[in-house]
Image 1 (cartoon, helix red, strand yellow):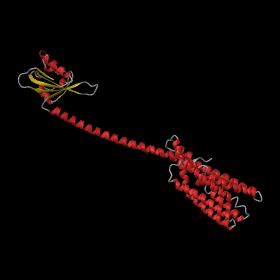
Image 2 (cartoon, helix red, strand yellow):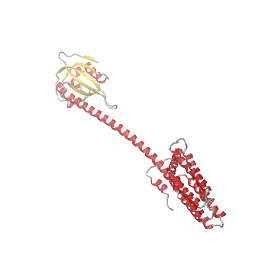
Image 3 (cartoon, rainbow, N blue to C red):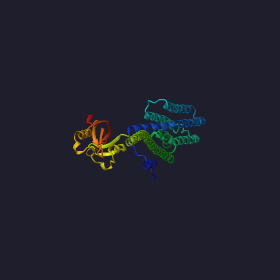
Image 4 (cartoon, rainbow, N blue to C red):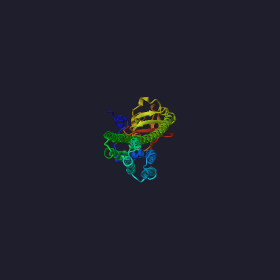
Length: 375
């Protein structure tokens, strides 16, 4: 058995399947009706042309006034279907199912007219008229399968009333029971009805896939648009961070050069005034290289044991505080020479969890040394 292409496409589709909802059913019904109405100009005008040719044959073979009435009725059915096609694109408050039912009504009327042609007008004994009528019915009923397949019973509404009356005529009315003709008619009706239903199923599967794929593409487009917006925001944030990082790096470089090159003696210590970093001016003020004091307390080195009283306590208190403070005092450099200077101590904010830091600027004073604490 040959696999269904629509089912195969669903299995092989790389896109995920979406849950089918009532809204999808509405879109499917609308798509089926749209597909049906696309063919109405063809399925209306071509049968009308056939009806005109049939009228000529009927008049030629003596049908007379009855043939003209039949043609006028067929013209009315044609005008009805043409009006449906005209109004479909202009009236938007009618449900798709209603538009489909209106087409079925028109097909039923046309099928009854073809059926009347194959029963009332065929029973004259004129073989030319009989052959022509049978040919016309078979052509227009069989040729409209594809056109009416989008809607499930649209073709059956045309085919059954068009074919069954001629079969009854051949089987019950005509002079002899034409078994082969009746059997062929039954096979014909069953075949075209089965083909119409199978074609309808394929069209329905195709439209269903189209609806799902359109929704998936819409979702994909929305997701891509959201990604583009997010990428744009990320790029903007990255640019801002890069600019901030460059500014921070520039500021850090400037502060680093200032720390190293300023003529003021500058130190970096922890909250216990243990030495962490210094500049050349600090070494010059303190009298020698400070590498040996790295990580060591500064106060024991610059205050002799007999002077480690108010000055040392004030400096330690300022280093452990949270606000800048200035302490003016006398200390001894590393060569034991007395120096009068002011210690400007500033707490430095550091990341959470890291040891506290203080910046110490030592400014030499002129005149006699004394102790002064200014916060």
